Image (cartoon, rainbow, N blue to C red):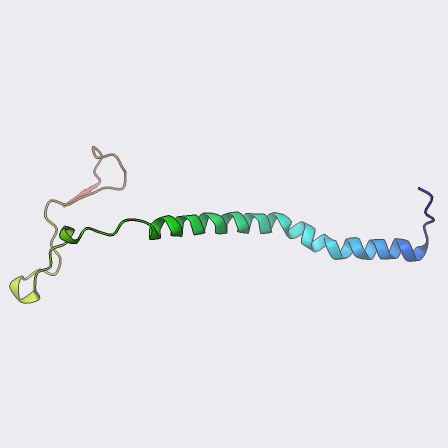
Length: 90
């Protein structure tokens, strides 16, 4: 290439590569954190854009008219999306 190598040029290049070593090694972690942050923001955004609960879905009864604080009529609870598999039924 026609550029003479001197001690100053070699030591400067080595010092430059040494300063860049840590950022280059941390680049995969940075990309991982950025990807996780993007997924988190998308999840929060989709949650906040959900429709509100219907006003007639909850019935409010004054405390003096019932002995129960929470009552569930005909509730079905499941850990899976399939309706035929019910792990808990009240």
